[in-house]
Length: 247
Image 1 (tube, rainbow, N blue to C red):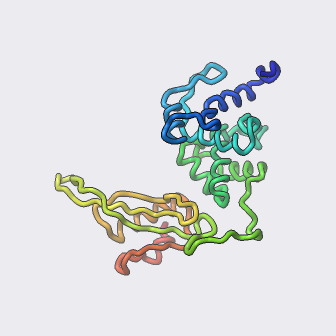
Image 2: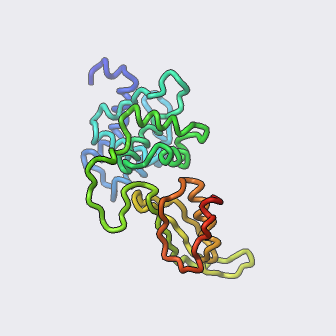
Image 3: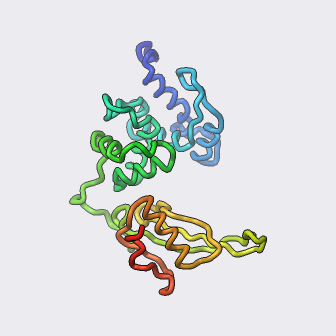
């Protein structure tokens, strides 16, 4: 290792990150999957090059793998923030997640990514979506141009996040209610057709329109209003037309 590089804290951190993901890159890990390896390695706090212990999340190692495959060792070096000179609001973990989300779901916009970052605890809710938007623009991570060639899609597959949500219900086990009586439970879930992201899911004792409307309203309040909603609910379970406005 070059002595000059060894004295560079950012490059030392890059080598540290590579050491953790090297078994994945080289295909030498003995775990059942990459996810299992990442869970095992992050099971306990890890001492970083500066001597401080830190409890990483498995998803962080998976993001490092994605970055290394895309740009090699240089991609693991902490990058200067696009908001340098202003309030330091995007952490390294936050930046890694933005890159991962844009790679996996390129049509997610800044607002949708901001919501995911806040929900995952990577970004304080007080940080404006504009901060994420500026970072995406400064680093050339915008969504593909709409005028570009469209890839072939299967039937019912939508072109971007929020174009259509799909909702359905499935049976879950019997559990005791507040009175001790065992009752059937139902999982009502809503999934974005493009991203396959669960935008809402909850267990209920009743599979009815009232419970679905509560779940749908929470989903709209969290990630916005979809262009279309696909569901096989019977007519008597159809949402009132004013539900979206109420949300």
